[in-house]
Image 1 (cartoon, rainbow, N blue to C red):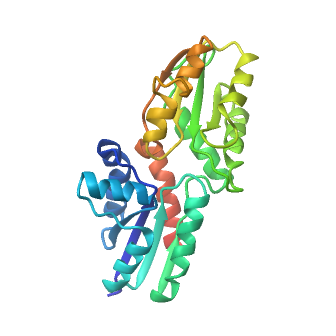
Image 2 (image 1 turned 180 degrees about the vertical axis):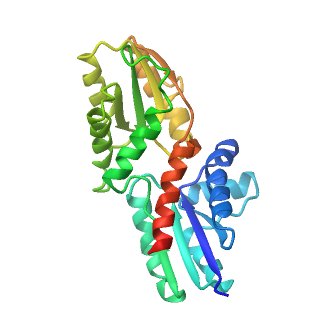
Length: 261
């Protein structure tokens, strides 16, 4: 019988309770769905890997370490599913590492990150908007905070903002911490609107340091503080996309598509 391994690749988080309800939960779903395969974990953030080893005595593989361990354990088929949001720097580096091991397995298949196609964009809009139907869209703007990247794929965030708008959700806005669209661009759009309240949500698989500090903290440069100082009544949700069953289903579709190749 051919041994098959499924490797779930995440950026990672050092916050245990966040990890349990996102990365752990998704890996459990994958194992339950594919009981005849063995599920492995890898993080792409070496900083988080080192922190977890120091604080929780957890030994998490890098992608390279995981591939080596899977190969040495005699697995012949490899399926990789990232929990990345976009096909950016982290995902590109992952693919490059996988390619160096391609001759070690009889079969290597890789699933796509969350936002890969226009269908993914539409599904994510549906998933997010269904979570916030109780908020009054007439007076409350909902701002999604993504990470952002210098990678050329970054315009996918602006495309997602556009998808919200064409689907009729004009009160949803998408911004990023480190790239375009910036919070300043969103503020310019808010100035010509009648919204008095803002609700902030993370557009990340886990609600980690960026969500806690850059989005929701009392620091002067957090999005909450910036918007509060402009006179808006600001609330927020610290719930990563990995906690949404509907978002997990998008990743599972990508994994199944890879399996079917």
